Image: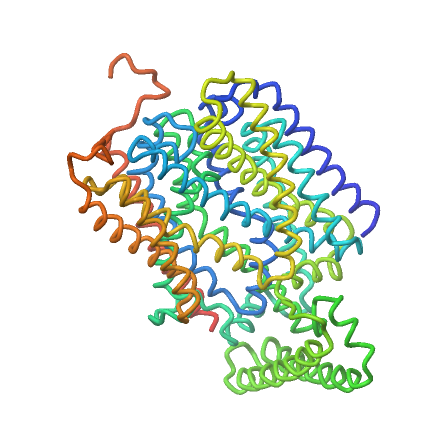
Length: 563
Length: 42
């Protein structure tokens, strides 16, 4: 990194912290600190909704996933627009009219305090772990860039976000989200232009896409119905629908976004912004990963992008032969790629077959090299998250590196801030105010909110240290979510749609739902997106059956607030 | 309803049903275009 890159990153960090902290003056009351006085416009809330979901994991993990696995991951989002419609019809008006601070507060009105406390507790566990993985992604990038100690990097990223979230509350989170989204898209746009302009003379964007497409990297619709297949149109439409319903409708980090909107209509519009834009945005991000893949058809990629791991293997004399074999395989593939895209004209069956065959040989040589690196490595490693940052550092010009690092920071900080704010809100409102100090002053709750934000920031950093060594980070986060979201969703379905549901049923339904997901993940090959469906259905079924055992005259759950 | 604040006044259900229909239509078109994109470049 050159001086200009450093200046861009430092200027970004300084601005965003200043911008967040100056919101402190609007955060004196608990309505202001936790809900922005319910006065934010739809477009700011909508951008904040997208910024919260679009984390650094989305940039680093998704581009890496597109590089190694193609665009099939996009199917994960196919259920999102439908989930948004359902939420606009149900959850948004319910929560707004109930005048609640947290989603779980509503459950006490519908059931009782036990259900509220249990669901809020599971939210704290799942998002407390989730935010840790969100911090670890940019920390890995930084540790590669600067050669810093990973643990120190995690605390530097996590705590700088904690500072402005702690002081500025939800106003700081939302308004910094808006500016961070601008930085993210500007950075990605510039990155895409630079990659395409780096293709060899005579190779156009269309040629590059033909190369990727011939290897099956551009598959965006897989219609096979197999529960063991991770990304198909069915897992996206059904499993993804349940996950998005759980995430946007029951996760406080998202519910808090639309609770800050001026009205029900503005809350709805903010969610529908994602319904229209999320799939195209995700396509754009995946396309960057594909273009990186195309770039490396003409320039030899590192055998392993995780330079720390490959360094250990390089000390072994056997590695020289493996590396020579790898370089030769890449040279053959490059030749075939050039012939396919320029000399042989795209579409020539012979050139296409030769290219596919050379790619197969290249992958075999890489597999051999990776197996060797694994042998010499102390632990299992995952290369996916290192692809994009390594590419940026080695191939982007001065200034663009700084801009992309700032965009990765922006993506990380926007998500971390929203999560920390939501964790602090649930801790303060659902636990501290409800169970310990129900009659305290506004300024006292704001003080507790700030302390909670700080403690959750520390906790998330500790989790991030462990998460850094897990698999593809984006999947780790989604897996954490899938363990809880389906069951949490089931409780809200019982609350909104099942009049006969009682608190005892909701309470035990939730526990059975989570247990069923744990069993499914431990003893079957079912892919994680389906856990949301399983958790929700089991929670609703068990919750309903147990509710039937409770007398309709019983004090347990006779209350039903139709709103 | 006539005293409602213009900012907080809700649009009628009919309006929102049209918006939801537009979301579904757009999603179907986008997924179809993505499928066509895959087919064209494969």
